[in-house]
Image 1: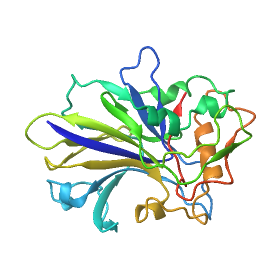
Image 2: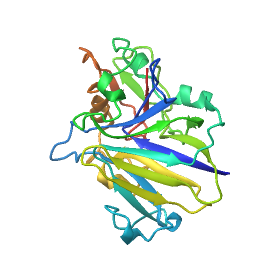
Image 3: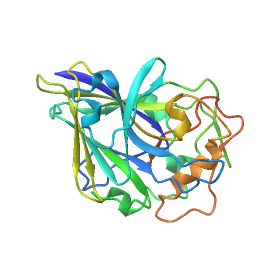
Length: 267
């Protein structure tokens, strides 16, 4: 067995299941409908350390060229109508949510109590429309917790039930894979068909899934107002609502220097 961490970055919405859903939480990467000339669209992706790839990168369809962050070479697959899954998983392992996740990751219905308990039904489909969703990853087991914590409080305006809080910069999912070989990441194209399979080394410690502006791939913790705006970005989440609310609280100043994009939980 191998324990691996999935780090979840950027504009990502972790959905609680409805009664009939088979997952514990769904990591939804919403389509960026807020882009303009000064705010490049967020890119949904799954990312790997290059040294963790068993298959030569040039043999993996659609994989990016290498880029360096914190001295490590990375590769990524960009998502647009894709489902990401991991295998083989220890199906006997439980799912649990750390108290740090509930404290540090904003809950959408506390940020805005007008929202329904769940977003639009299409967010739960096996093939969500790309007009709403670039990609998703279903969590079935593991321990979900807050990752790095911002150094400063983030407030929402207008303030509802979610208080000023030092938010999580990312969420972390610790999972257990089985077998003697390394874990396998499967990226399924739900629009055009086709499956890309990425086999990882048995000692792989981490992969990243997220939805970030292009500039953040070389500095994932950067806060760069010229390319990213947390108040503007947060409006993307309201695009998932069953009924768009009249009032849309957004993060406002003073805001954390690091949390340019933040994961949320729904409800």
